[in-house]
Image (cartoon, rainbow, N blue to C red):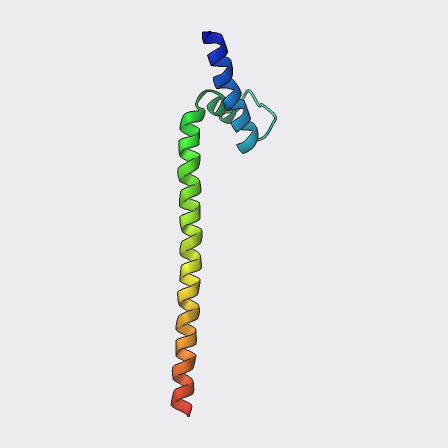
Length: 83
């Protein structure tokens, strides 16, 4: 029973390794061992990295939007001064 549970654990690690790193196992690489044996930690790290990446992307979009709004307001004030 313990061997089956360990095989399932390694299987989940192998599937996640294939998803994030690639299907080829490089046994001299720490990433392979890390994904196979430490996949719960790697999932935690990947989740937070993705969350931070999404937050940065949203921040960039918001900054661009605010910049475009400020340019539009500046142009509107400039038109009112000329008229």
